[in-house]
Length: 502
Image (cartoon, rainbow, N blue to C red; front, side, top):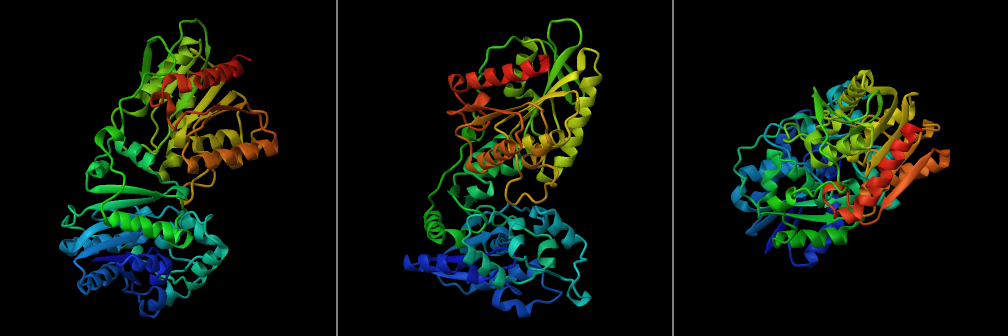
């Protein structure tokens, strides 16, 4: 007999699992939806002392009263914190931990660390929300139009969103600010990650992050770790309870996708265009690939994506794709420029933008560069960094290019400042030529941001040239067969250099 212990995220209670619990019970499982102290119909029990430790103890007590020998414990969003705290104290009772659209907190991490919405973070750290002083230990529950701060809600039926709002309870602040304490006792418990693709997560994204070499993620290649994807936003228990219940049953049975070390980052294919090994000059975090021609030359600055964990080796400018682009531009008579910027976390976009601006200033000041003929080319998550240049294009910016970019913050990326939204900024781009390369096999959540951008560009009659690579994936230059992407890469480079020379 399997028993499922279901722990939901902020503002909610056991009621949020109603439909999922019914499906699991129909399969013969025991189900224990948890309502933590101060939440749901236990909101009257909250007090200034209600903190994460209170919620950990709630889950521990429930586990102690479950008689089934096989206990699968599920943590959604914030709920993963009390789940991990309880599993750390009762590891022998847990057969599997399921992370449902949740982060991977470590010892000492408060739940606040994974809160991506800047407004919510400020409320947590600086309570000044108009509440009476005696209630400033509570974080008010969201209004109907505020739930997107916590994750995607586009797939939620209207009645479900209204129910979520009407039954929500204020969250005790200390549950989000108190550090999680883990001894490591549950490190050997099998785990499953359920990723919600409409919220921006996917197995492909996890594989990519593992491949960056971040030591914190290397445990994900353990054979006891499995993954599932759901085509859902942040609240799959409300938007697709049947599908979620089916996934939880499969997770309990040990099923799911398993990563392997080679899947994390397979050996890169050669750059799809044959380019000569031209000289490279390194200045700080900036690399120059220099053409053989004399005199100041136009330059193409290639801006990598991310977030890329700090300490990754080699750094992005040494990845085959960016080396290839730098050499390719130089072989055609322009100065190719690559750089490393500090986009290590979603909160780092402003820092990365400063790094990019500093690199451009360095490039334009170089006597080998024609400072009045510059193109900027953005990739993947670096696409958000294009917003500043779209919003107010300088005269020297002759073209802006983007390949498989993210062009609007994904659901739940509230920590990203509003300024980093190219789909909004393009409305003031004027006549700036924009060269956009789309991957036909892009991840749906990322493709949606591109379509939003294209629609906005069409609406304001921006000068956008769209190049499609139908058989290409995200990061296609060194993962897809050259014959699938070569034409798109060559077409994009010809267009960019044409605008520079024109």
